[in-house]
Image 1 (cartoon, protein in one colour):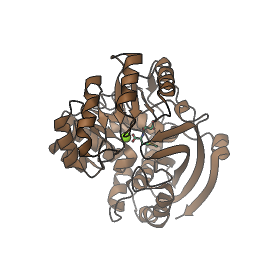
Image 2 (cartoon, protein in one colour):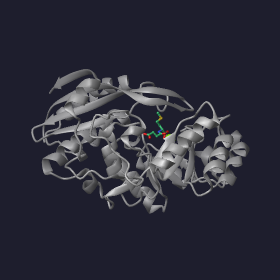
Image 3 (cartoon, rainbow, N blue to C red):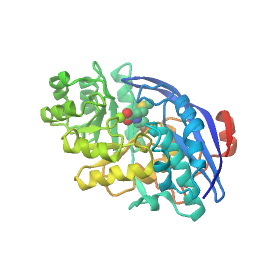
Image 4 (cartoon, helix red, strand yellow):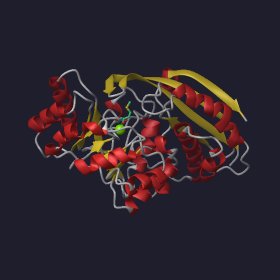
Length: 368
Ligand SMILES: CSCC[C@@H](NC(=O)CCC(=O)O)C(=O)O
Ligand SMILES: [Mg+2]
């Protein structure tokens, strides 16, 4: 393939409700979508970077800038472009994994659409639907939390994840256990809000039979997570710390985690995400697919990834309505707690033109 041009599109997606984590509150997603035009086909990629550099160092304006000035021009120089050629062509630029992931995904989507191959098949999916968990934000009071958890369980979600932070951790977990029982699959996500000095406090979560505690410490503190893992019975899962297959191998070798949350945007794309999966499977470590409040475009690709054999825990692959009143694609609708794996070529979905126009804030065409 030869890259002929690329469109950077910013869309504004209001959330159905504010989503609060230990690093802030999201009311609306300012999403960067990428459409690449090649001589064979077009392809779509969604950049998962948030508006501000609070989850990681990336943010959406920075991703747009690095794509416009460095990443897209670098691909224009590749004579025979295909998805495996993207990462090597971009390796000269440091970091910016979410921006690189969006670009690689768009190239992969175009390549697979041209071949008529679904992404799930390309990645090695073994399932045609995936069980879905849901992420529940930090609330103002326990009553509202329990109402929201009850609604998600009634909707059929097979796993509940609670966002936690100092001052909102043991009590919400206890309240959910007391109201919904010990059989509900339950986990927590701290988004780096604690330090290893909080180990004794975090051990108070151990009696509640959690599946895992996600990213309790700073993303660079692998040794702290290894020390914490020795003090807790709840398995430690890493999210922000795992930025590549190599970093997954390092974390596992150090005993820093027993479970890995795989997010394609965080690790630089779906091809690296598969490598992270393969490393974890080789170590006998379960993985699950994390989420970044993706629209149906990123959601479709995540559901394909979540169908790989090592994804043995329910992911944050919720229905479109968890976050959006109207998605930019046909909505993903929960069916008996599962989402179907897209079967169309490439990521298997495309934006609905009218809906895309409604939410578009800006478009920028980069001729190459
Ligand atoms: C805006 S918070 C995004 C990062 C967070 N993601 C979720 O909690 C799941 C979000 C989703 O369902 O897409 C995480 O650290 O795992
Ligand atoms: Mg997380």
